[in-house]
Amino acid sequence: MERAVPHAVPLGQVEVFQALQRLHMTIFSQSVSPCGKFLAAGNNYGQIAIFSLSAALSSEAKEESKKPVVTFQAHDGPVYCMASTDRHLLSAGDGEVKAWLWAEILKKGCKELWRRQPPYRTSLEVPEINALLLVPKENALILAGGDCQLHTMDLETGTFTRALRGHTDYVHCLALRERSPEVLSGGEDGAVRLWDLRSAKEVQTIEVYKHEECSRPHNGRWIGCLATDSDWMVCGGGPALTLWHLRSSTPTTVFPMRAPQKHVTFYQDLILSAGQGRCVNQWQLSGELKAQVPGSSPGLLSLSLNQQPAAPECKVLTAAGNSCRVDVFTNLGYRAFSLSF
Image (tube, rainbow, N blue to C red; front, side):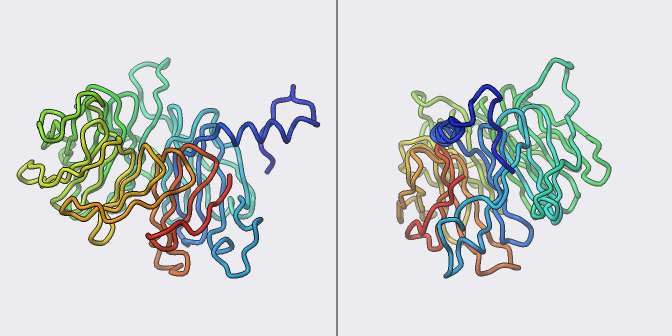
């Protein structure tokens, strides 16, 4: 599908317009298809591009293989976050979440399957949705963002079943403790809150900025990224990137990274993080910086690990942010190539 071009732009200037779009593009979100062979990326213009990882990684790959197989207009505003079920691509922007069938997308038929809007306090409120989190055991989706709440949606019925209230400012990020029905959330109020999904109650609060070893008042108190692995959590943003033991609410490792981090994830015995600056950072749990691998974007907003067992040949790390490029790392030590929106 062709990129949207304003009617006022003469045909001779279409290429110039599209070049300017790419120049000012930000890619906020990524999601891997259930088969593991495709990657979706969502940008600040409301577009979603689908890339064929299998084609781009092929020994016969050409430059055309690194461009989208399909691009479509998904939202009127930015696509802040995405997630994939075994059949659907879910995307969210200002105030609503939409579903697309992966099978139909790949046939280049990009009609939305459904759209839902959480029950906001007023009909005039259209807060952005910053985070989507799948809870497979519950067949549920959790949304969070500008209205300071977490909304739980039943994916089978499409109904919103509960709202979790406790944050006093924007919620930026969510993480699931897989061994128990608990969700972590972090936001502008500087708190990481732990929620029990069975009781729909907040059971633990960690105000990161109040701990002297983590606090960086010049950067603010906001929590922009978090990840969890059993009894451990790593989070960062304004405060330093820090590893926490959840049961004791104790910071065990403060990582020596000055730039605010926007995405973090556990990977094997490492922690991967990215944010201001071009590099994907690889940390030992002890706090030692193992490697910094430069990419093509001046700032990174999302990392995606493709670990789908159905496509081991497409096992890659992808990184995207303040450019039209998605960097592909076939080995954590270097950037192999970039996909181009």
